[in-house]
Image (tube, rainbow, N blue to C red; front, side, top):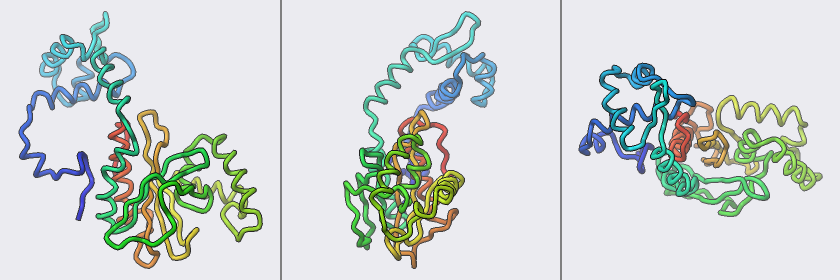
Length: 275
C-alpha cells in the first residue's frame, strides 16, 4: 500500500540509510524557528524553541551571520537575512501547486483505491485540471476542464467555504440562474441550509457529498493552502457509495487530508498538519 510523505513518499528506512550532515540538520531547526517569528528573536528564546541550549545554538548563528542567512539587530536579536530572502523568492518563482499535487495524487489513488482529481478556482468556478484513476477506473463524466457545481459537489462546497465570499456570491448567483427548475439541490433548500453545509466543511476541514450529483457516487474533497493561508487547490477523492469510506474520520478522509497537508507544506504552508 502506498504511503504519503515528502519526495514521492520515501519510507523512514530509506531516509535512515541516506547519509547526511547532522550539523546542517541541527542548524535548520534554528532557521525554521526564525521563520515562525515575525519579530527578531533573542538567542536564548530561539535556542529554547529549537530544543537546544544557547551555547550550542550560538556557533550556528555566527556561521549563519557570516553567509547572510540571518542578520542581527542592535539589541543582539536575530532575524532572517538577505540570503534567506533570495532563496525564498527563488522557490516561490518556481512553485507550481498543481505540479506539486500531481506528484502525490498517484499514491493517494493507489492507497485509497479510488479516483483522485485536482481542482483549482477558474473563471467559471472550481475546475478539474488533473485526474488520476485507480486500477479499476470510475466511469463518470469527469475530465480535465470540467467545472464543478458550487452547491451540488464536494469540490464546489470546499471552494465556497474557503474562497472570498464576494467571489463566491457572483458565481453562486450565476449557478442559481442556470439551475432554474432543476430538481431539488442544496441551493434550493435555502441560504441557511447551504451555509450550514459550508460550516460543516470548515468544521471537518474537508467537504463531502453522498450520492450527489451522481447517484451511487460519494466524494470527499480536502483543501490545499499556500503560505498565506489562501485556498489554492482541492484534492477530490471519489468512488462507488457501496465501497467508499465516506466517514469524516475514515481511512479515505485521513489519507486525503494527509496528502493535502503534504502539498500545502511543499508550497510554503509550514502550519499544515496531517491528521
